[in-house]
Amino acid sequence: MEKVMITGDYITLGQFLKLKSIISYGGEAKFFLSQNKVYVNDALENRRGRKLYENDTIKVLNKTYQITK
Image (cartoon, rainbow, N blue to C red):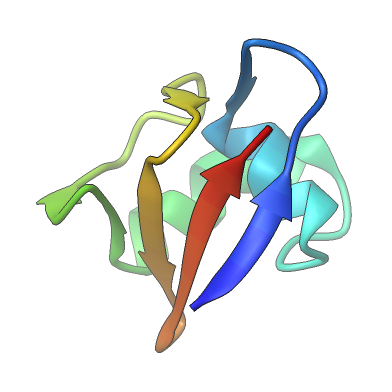
């Protein structure tokens, strides 16, 4: 599991995907989420604006990430 450090209280799922270079720019988030399964805390998620907080886990493209502060 890879740890992803954030400085604020949260990061959106779209920002997270861009931060980890899974997508190139924010406009790709909606399409990416419609074509790929992304799980947040083991629940399927398709909202690019979903807020990710400390200790949330994200599973995408066979990798697992955890948000830390």
